Image (cartoon, rainbow, N blue to C red; front, side, top):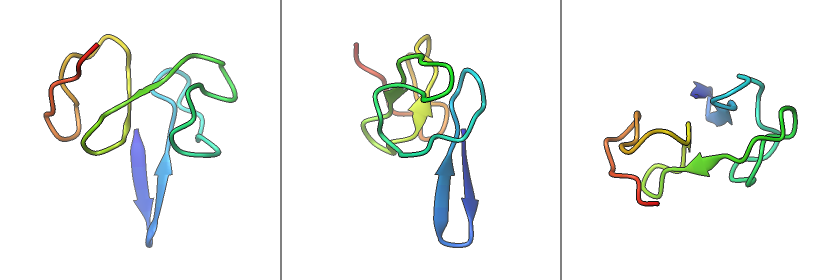
Length: 61
């Protein structure tokens, strides 16, 4: 999940909903789950998704 506050884009873990301290890390600092990111919009996605829930890009394994 992402949220825009002013000009700053905040990202949240799709599993525990904690704010990610640094975008594009390979795992959540709180729950330690590996996170995948959309190659197009670079938002964090649940691993079971085959299409980005934000921009519709097909997710490749």
